[in-house]
Image 1 (spheres, rainbow, N blue to C red):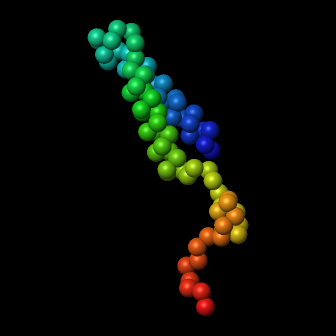
Image 2: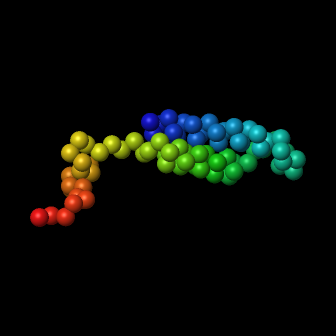
Image 3: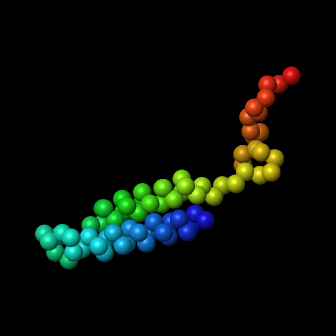
Length: 76
């Protein structure tokens, strides 16, 4: 899933780079690489937040480091 998020971010960044070629008359034939990289990072970040980072917790409810997850109920 993480690879797909990065791929979509790169494709959107490339599209922004290609589109920015014609919108800047002073820059000649060059696109805007800083804007394209920024858009790619924003898209990848938003997709990662929407769909998760791909790290799943095991069935026991503890994180991957092996520490137990905090309990909601008070100990007796």
